[in-house]
Length: 249
Image 1 (cartoon, rainbow, N blue to C red):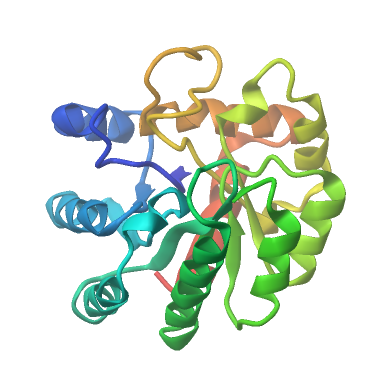
Image 2 (image 1 turned 60 degrees about the vertical axis):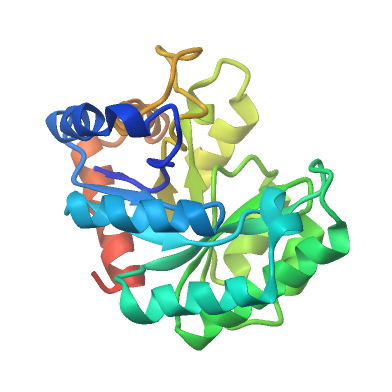
């Protein structure tokens, strides 16, 4: 199993990282993809990936962090791409629920998409009630987008797939009131899906309310297996192929 999105540098996880990584391995997690939210986060993620061979880093500036962004930060991100084994750009996107400037969010988003396009890296997207703006911007770039922790409706998901995107589902699909999202999971082809924990957030049932960790990805896989009436092993193989084909790893 792959946990496609886990914030391993988060203060709720980092002090206990050794045991958390061990529990993930014991649970059958082969890879953990860990994105950053700012430059300091990127540094931590890169160091974590050097310590644990099953952790792969992504780097990016989250929309909540754009007020602190400087033009030289983009140079630092590019330097990381040149010198380190960075597999993608993320977590980036648009989210107007934050008190950061909308126009600056769009500007920083576009600059990071330019970087992804230049180095042919997939992008992992944070989209919260900003789908139309994100889609409009994405159409100007030749990148492969992945919608992290998708909570969109079917129309939005279909439009995202039309531009060559992938959809990543989190533990939200295990929540009791997530029937609409489960219906979307049911009809989407596994060949366009990733699964994630978004640790330490969005803990799946039956551990909802506790700190999330990559070992709990098994409950997300289990729910997809239940929804699609397919064995977990087959789901794991297909998602593994999706990852290998997209990231060339």
